Image (tube, rainbow, N blue to C red; front, side):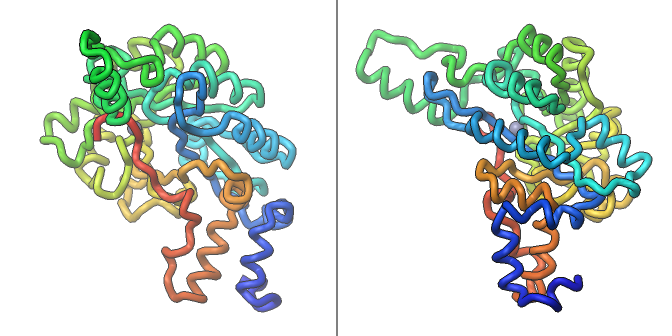
Length: 322
Ligand SMILES: [Zn+2]
């Protein structure tokens, strides 16, 4: 990297912190794909804490203004198959995990307004009402309410703030351009499941999803997606289930050179960045600056893995069994 010979590394890192300069650095993101993981979306009326819809609009407008390429997961698969060495523009893809109702009412219309592809990873048992209501904050709130009104019984289904998207609403968002991928049946951490259950969770969620919508993509997403959540057995199970790739929450760019050292199974452990709500960190990621900062700070600290912005590190899925 010749920049670090022209400028002191710490000064360069500071300049990169100014998101207004990000377009100037965008050339370094050539060939990189940032896949973001999102979860829930803020809905003050229901008391849902999550991604700020206004920030999402701002980020999508930024990507459009600076002519980033917005990819569907189908496009990402195509890049993995065919390569994309001629492209000068970094690419971005968005994924939303779990299948909460807010996707239909808040997120999908925003992505559609910016003509931006998005994939929802669906925990199919959650939509089918097969999961127990296990969200800890919801349970605690209900218990508190119960103590005030002893004649109220706990509902067997989640309250509106914790409701899944319905299959009908899922199909409605498909008409807006959204696509869908399997995220297991029960959101079980696959590495902790017996062989048979591990395989069933992937296959059955993939089968159930295709039964309900034609807008599916052959890409699986591991619950939680952290290093402890999957290993070679899970990658092989995903391959056997017939999907063509699988996503983790390991932070990194999803070009073929960045996948973990799984050999031919690399496409079943593709990295994703946690979605940062603040624009400077968002811009750092999409422009490829995380990679540059890693190199520079690695040189400063002699540590190659201490440099990712904390809000782009992996985050577990919230609110579902883990
Ligand atoms: Zn999840």
